[in-house]
Length: 253
Image (cartoon, rainbow, N blue to C red; front, side, top):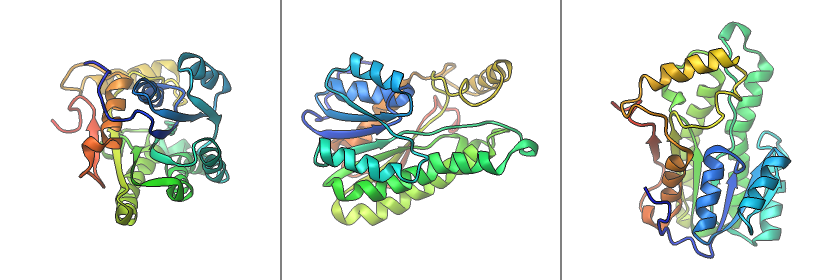
């Protein structure tokens, strides 16, 4: 499928958190290619520098969604650089897989901080900067419904994030701001390698997940990013509070 889809983004202002890799980076590349102004965040200065080199004109900022102060810092960067936003893709997230017996309070708190509290505080800080009629998309996960062993904290954080989408959609509806979620399944990113699992265990989980995908393959980041961009665009003008699953049929068939 071509990535030259016209979403009407030329000249519009967008934020992508977790924009230096995976689905977030694909979204930045698509927005940039469509003529949008983009602010991308991440925690790796090297990856952000590479993103700016590959997408001239994109602005990047180191920002940790798990830091309670980071949301207001992000809003200040948006205000200074763009004056406001037409849309935000709150994509930043993390996963640490470990069995219940070894799960610590620190591991639970960190995943809830990044995956749930981060987007909640970000929307609170960014709402005054969002144009009426704008859009917010968050990245949930099919893990919220899968009961994947070792993903207690991750799955719980993403399930709560799905609930948050409904509340935010209701609260921002009077301003015409739509809030939706894209829910990826198995996508070719470094997700498993960054999950804290040994390589052999990560590969075993990846293969077991692949066996459940009716389309018989992992998706690529752009396939999830295109759905996020659809939800950010005027093409989805009557869609809010929803979650669009991008998993090759794994959770639906």
